[in-house]
Image (cartoon, rainbow, N blue to C red; front, side):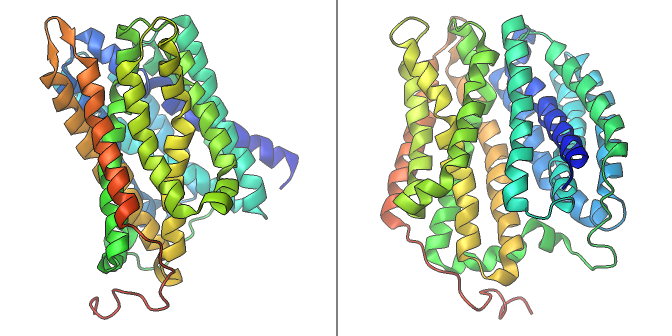
Length: 405
């Protein structure tokens, strides 16, 4: 891959994650200022989970079969720019939800499209892709630092930044390297795209334990993604969005070291630690504060993100690749993504919103209790997972073959 292509792909990834990093973390604080309830804020975060379910269908049924990826990327980001600008002007919870859902349905497919464009240009993806993808994390970090130090988290300016960056990437996409549709002429079903063929793996009790545990822990992650920024700001943290970018620094480091940990600890221990890390994060947040020395608990809760994300989400994907027969590995990855980023995130966004409303009065929110709920859930799930889970090698035969005819 030549230098010009590397620069093009790096700019693409930088803008792709700058767009999301601009609004996703701080939206809860802005909506809280507008007077949205916890349930209404949770509903707003459901939009990305719903879009995560819809986007594989769009990519698999449309983008992969009919149009070059860079053109679809450009069209979606141009539409997303207009929708995000509209979202930034809305203050009514009902209309906000539907407008943001429309935006999320435009944005979520672009995550797969940018990967497809990048991989299409690479000769050695294992060596070339991590560096390009890391530039995306840098985009998230840069915009988070800017918004945090500018103290604009409770305004609609982050959304306007996202709209502007989406417009820029939408235009830039049309000069990206050509990436023809990979599935032209192939018959693809919705079941293939959502990974439903991999349901047969649930016959293995250990895989079923993994799926159930992943679903439950994924639900608890919505507490952090949806309400951490509100909590830190309400509790007196300064430059919150900037400080929370420490999680992205940590994420990059832990993902880079994941192969080392696999060789030393094994995949079962890694995934258990990832689940328990979410519990530790919430306990730290429950008992942290804005003054020294307890503020250190907050900082640790943020920088543990690399352990939470890498050891849970990424390690889970590695486990699926390890145990699924080769013929259905893609289907199995789609299935676990549907479970965690789709169903788990959607249920978690709703559940977290209900919990926040339940423990919020005119005097304020009882954040200690709010954080202890996902802390205990993650702790119990992590312990049960360690006790009842075992890694088995991939079977040579596809488990669902006999039942699918």
